[in-house]
Image (cartoon, rainbow, N blue to C red; front, side):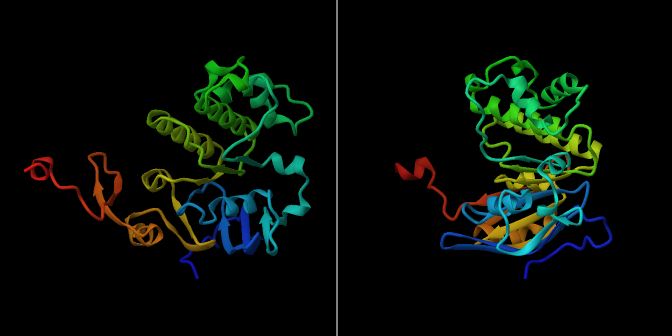
Amino acid sequence: MPMSMNTSTHTKLMQLDSASISLGMSSFGPFTLEVVPGERIAILGPSGAGKSTLLKLMSRDWTPRTGRVLFKGQTHAAWSLQDLSRLRAVLPQSSEVAFGLQTDLVVGLGRVARIHDALLSDIIEASATLAHAAHLLGRRFDTLSGGEQARVQLARVFAQLWDASDGLILVDEPLAALDPGLQVDLLDSLDVYAAERNHALVAILHDVNQAMQGFDRLLLVKGGKLVADMPSSADAVPALEALYGISLSCVTDIQGSFVVSPLRKSTRRPATEATA
């Protein structure tokens, strides 16, 4: 059984009760966990561990074979897609859009569940600004680089839940196509956006330091199982070492942030020694 955080004293936003699914010859789960409004949760694990599968169970992309997934106390089946989209936004690893669609329209897709949207233009502009994509408005989406497209898609997520509260944001590797500076900026934007609205943020990440420094809670997935559910702190280091099968060096930087880095199993001989 995974180590688990106790969230029983908080209102449950999402709950997975022994949710599992089979994909081909592989089985994933059972996953049991809870998410409450305002949490920042990072999902970590080696490639192929089941991180995206867990996120798709949470997003309603996939239906569990056994167990159940509840959103605000109701099964996904009880929610219409329109109502769900007002409270839950998803940013997958890749998103296909119609050929030649203008970026403004891509951002505006986050608002399609609203029949009358008097503030649409303002929300599109504000969302793009928060996603560092305001300069991309008016462009054709298919002319943008991968990193630019990622920013526009993040703006779509911002627009979708802009005027909601206590919602859920699910993102799968949102920083993969971005340079380090933009990664920091967009993590800050996600944090501010979610905090102002008390949205829960659940993100699949590959960077352990981003997870440790920007998120409150870690879900560790390995072999299709949730092997740990714990606070993001120095106490998580042994579990992270077991998760990836590595040793981690830990330091506190001059700003007081806890930083980890993998230790190499072997080191190269100095050049002077190699050529002696």
